[in-house]
Length: 188
Image (cartoon, rainbow, N blue to C red; front, top):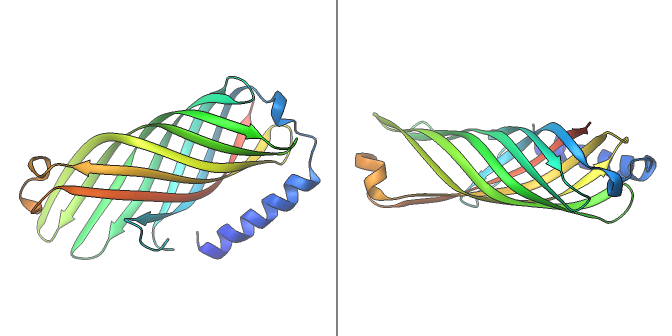
């Protein structure tokens, strides 16, 4: 998914949100499921068309403002020939939503992300796991009463101590992984 596709999807969502105002975000409660595709940035690098991520999520909107959401995210592969990593994991987060109109809301979430990373540096490879704080902000556009388009920006802070990494690093490892995504959410 390249940047032009993501921008086109955002424009279509904006036009759709204004056209289909039949969905009432204020009355939207109960279970939901969805998925998203996005672009990944590691340590404030450019959002690279080659670093794609995918998400699956399910949650419960408790009332018009608060909910809880669990999900799976695959950040794909980052790095090059000399060093690369594959990171994926599961999250659980509290969600907040501020409906601004009948078809548009701002969103936020904060929670934990339990991750697994396969790392290869030259001839060395290893597997690392951890759980970290994750948080994000976004917007939600209603397309129909049950279907919403979500645009999101999520961040995961990964911190590993030198003794956790072993011989492939000379010090502690701190990394910030950002995800810019667009996806669909279906409310039951």
